Length: 167
View 1 (tube, rainbow, N blue to C red):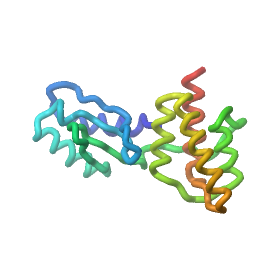
View 2: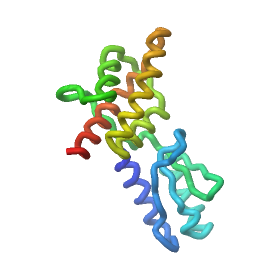
View 3: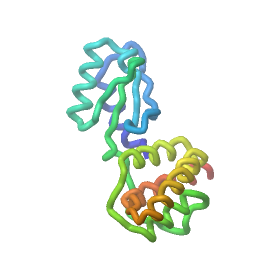
């Protein structure tokens, strides 16, 4: 699910001439999608040029204390319109079922980023995330709160992506 974001980021990085190829990783911070060590691989002018290009392209850019750039642009995470076929096994299937039975148009960008990152990491990571979300959503239902129904297409895409990786 993060491939489109990585491609867009790599296109921006291609315009910079660093001393070495910068690393691009999933950000460990829930408020950010990706991170790059470009400031450690390029001079200050190259880094500032990249920050300018990324900001102009719609990326939100931040910096860590250890010199990495944090990047976020959730609109680059593609979703799917609906689930096709049977529910996936495990916690992802349980969450998809919950969201189908409790539709809403709300979504949390932190959860969207978490689903995309977990899908890229693999089935076990997605299952751990879904177990945590399942517990949170059960509490919301008990309190008669809305579930983040707009996450449904992303959960479907994540389940499909992790299924394809394990086949």
